[in-house]
Image (cartoon, rainbow, N blue to C red; front, side, top):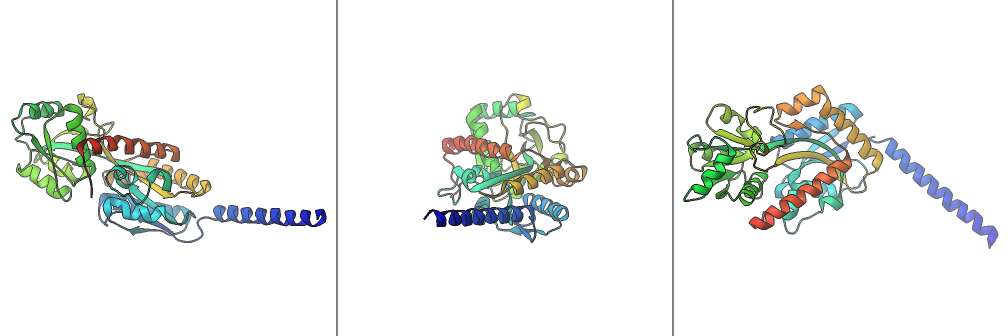
Amino acid sequence: MKRTAFPRAFACAAGLFLALQGAAHAQSDWPNKMVRVVLPFAPGGSSDLVGRQVAQHLSTHYGQQFVAENRAGAGGNIGVDFVAKAAPDGYTLGIATSGPLANNKSLYNPMPFDPEKDLAPIALVGEIPLVIAVNPSVKASNLSEFVALSKSSTNALTVSNPGNGTIGHLATEYLRINTGAKLQPVPYKGDTPAMADAMSGTVNAVVAPVTSLIPNIQAHKLKALAVTSKTRFPGLPDVPTANEQGVKLEATVWSAMVGPAGLPQAIVASLNQEINKYTGSSEGKAKLTQLGMVPLAGTPAQLSELMAAEAAKWEKIVKSAKISAE
């Protein structure tokens, strides 16, 4: 018995060693074929264009094709769910926004995946803040005056947003709940109609990603009261943040690369390092800025913390305002 046990144990150990060695070699050889990069929104939007910029850069750096593939629907959930259920081998990745990575967790029931359990955070790419803008006829020159005006008005001030459950909707509810402002959110199907009705005076104000509103703010067809990022937006340097005006409100659309849970750490580290280099480079900054994005960087752990913190933050607003994306 003892004579046969040792060879069998040795054979098992050798087999395990060879398997681990093969896995390590596969990781060190990554990528040795095309990598699919899932973009969970329709072609042509800012999130799609950002994802394609990053995929193109990674193709150049790694010498393999990182092919962008759109899988839109359910507020980004369909595409990210595909990533979450893919094999964790580094050949299916996703570049998604804060919606499916954090906010949707409290908006959709059931949610097809758990962002914090089913995804491997890789790297932040950048963020697009919101802007709060009003029709020029509204008698408020800053956000504090707008809040005060709403409280003194007989009827609630109407505020358009790009859609039910979007960050523009959530930010309006956040402002209403935390300041006591008398506001009525009005959801539209996209940035353009929400902006158009604010310009026509059909609604008093609009809260939407800053990139879609800049031209009409610069043309004085809308009056910008505040941006909702930590610091001022470079494209509108004269517009103060909400926080600067004493109104606590931070709300941005941030983008990040993720993979399925269980993605090898060597692949995560490699991608994180390269994306951080890109978003910090003059080329990366220039290309992302052209798309209205403020480049960001950070570790996978920091992205994980952001996903959890944002999910918890917006869950409180969703529950308080009784919002549902269904």
